[in-house]
Image 1 (cartoon, helix red, strand yellow):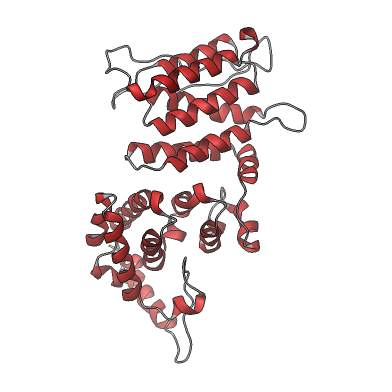
Image 2 (cartoon, rainbow, N blue to C red; image 1 turned 135 degrees about the vertical axis):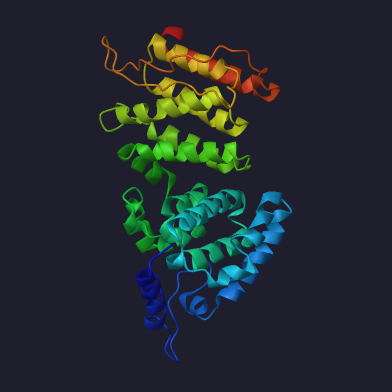
Length: 346
């Protein structure tokens, strides 16, 4: 539990921030103007969110749980500063789960009403900056994303500060700018991939997330000013691609990773080891939940600086279920693309 002193500071803060007569308190808002948001009480915002939950639950029954959780009537009195550390962690976990479920519907008004309440009551745009931004990232060229980056606490992060210029200017983020940032911060490629993978693991039908990873990764593989592909991009992408091809957690993730594999094979000469790793991963039947591909590595070839060498080191050889028929064609296309892209196959 928080100490008495901490609780008193929270309560004192309420008094200090009390709205004087004739003045409106400034509030962050995704949907409303500063003045309208300041004049709208939490109960009104919650009622809109509750309506949004009911509408979305018709399409994904899991959303209905928010009505008894984050959007319950009692949450209008929520105060993060009065919670124990364990309870704060529980609330954050609930918020992350809610953002995943809202992702496919984020351009629709019901989802935006729910997100508005999460901003208003839980400060999700400040406490979970990365998850908040990733929810709207597939729509980075829309006004909604602009609004998200304008209210997000970008200064509290290192990775997302590059968005400050867009937020200040009120302009969307172009895909080319996102790809350039991925070349500068290759960890961002892994973040985009892991988001698409997590959505697929949770059976959240959101093709746009996997498509975003595939498109941005392909753009990040474009040659730099000296005509060479940025080697750290290859180092960041290969583990993601190998994992995505081998796991086949969803057809969307597999298709995105197979497209990136083809781009990677065209972008740089791969040695036999790397080609074999990609082929084995693409052809592999998905592992069970207890199986994981071993860590992959990207090393320079002793014969050529342009060769990508080590890849996936092997898979569990126990019997597995047959490959899903809807992946037959994509698997073959991926194999052909990787093999045909190599100079030796020309």
